Image 1: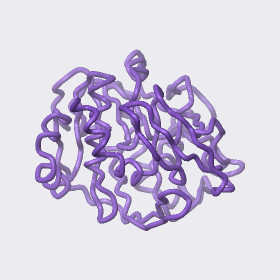
Image 2 (image 1 turned 90 degrees about the vertical axis):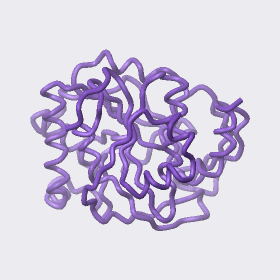
Image 3 (image 1 turned 45 degrees about the vertical axis):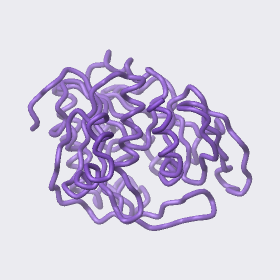
Length: 295
C-alpha cells in the first residue's frame, strides 16, 4: 500500500492502447481538477504509458500530476467496441480490471477516483469529502436530459440497480476497505457473478462489480451501506460528439437519440460536470482546450 502523503486528492487510472491515448485525456481531466477542485492529482499507469507521457508532454506531466504510481498488474483481456459518433466504431483493449486497487495505490487519506473521461467543470465534488465510507452515483441522465436505456439502469430487466464506478469517493475506514475487498472478490469471480446476476457477458465492467459489491454489503437487498451522490451524473455517450469548444467550459455537442442514433440535436453545455464517453471526441479538442488553460 502506498504511504499516505496528503489528506485529500484525486486519482486517475490511464493505460494507453493502440487506439486511444488515455494519458493525454488524463492530463486534460487533471487540468480541470486543478482548476475547479484545487486538489493534488495522482496518475496510476504502467511504465510504457508513463514513458509516452514524459516524452510527448513533459511540462504538462509535471503541471498536472503531483504523484505518478507505476503498476505492473496483469490485466484482463477486455476488448470492447467503442463508438466515435454513430458512424464510426472500432475495437480496442479496455484496461480496467485493477481499478479496485486504488485503495492500495492512492497516496491520499480521502480520495476521489475519477475516470479520465469525467470532466470537472464545477466544485461540486468537494462536497463528497463530508461523507464517511464510500460514495458513488446511482443515477445518470444523458446530455439530452433523458434517462439511460434500461440496461444502464439495472444489471438486467429484473435485476439490481446500477451503481456507476465513474466517480468514487472513499476514505480509509473499515467499510471502505471492505467495499474494495468485496469488489476484488467479484472481479476475481466475474463469470460466477455473471451467471448469478444475469448481466451481459463478454465485456468486463467495473460498474457491474461495484453494483454487486454494494448489493452484497447491503445484505443482498437495498440498503445504505454505500452513500449515493445526491444528484444524477450527466453522460455524454459514445454516439455523441463535441463539435465546438468556445472556452474551457462552453462546449457544443451533437447529441444522438439513444435508439435512433441518426436523430441528433445540438446541446450547449457550460458549467456542468460531464462524463464524456466518446474519448476520441475529447482527443480532437485536446489541443484547443489545453491552450485555454495557457491563456
